[in-house]
Image (cartoon, rainbow, N blue to C red; front, side, top):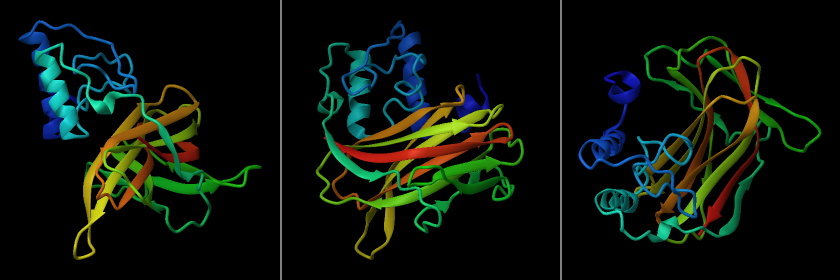
Length: 257
């Protein structure tokens, strides 16, 4: 379908992912597959949408060149060997855990819109607390944005002693108010510092979850982090299609080998 969701708003790399998947059907007569590697990644670009976390046909090989090389080789040769990054990784420990604290200046609002309207008035970020020692992040939307605006809260974390091609995983629990519809957004962005002391983005991984349950857990992973990465930015957010709020808690960023 030639519409905004399927094509016009997609990046060149997302379009390439999508086209190779469809060409697999049309030119190679391939069916959908559901196999996964030990780390949860799909074994083929011909994966299905049964599990959108492990298979988005717009983002199968969007993270690294090594991933793209494997998936395109495997598309034309099913005997292609599994690369190193597909193995079940070892957890090397937490970098950040449950540090949503009211008044923490390191967390900041980064709401944005695909349109030109002012989204700052669309979202309110507040902190709630319970018997735990840490607060919870609450993102509330005040009107139906029709899926165009995203309310995000973000924090940057310095990475130390990073080894080449390690992975990062960001996880969080969430609850949503009744009747809230839309998508939950969770990102990891990687940045390095150049010789002038300026920060440049290396890459970003965006994961989205359609709101189906009133509570649950979400995660995003980014593989083969370059050793020159200076810090990671983590993003928690909401792309709503109705009024309501979402609350994030127990946020963790961990390192994997």
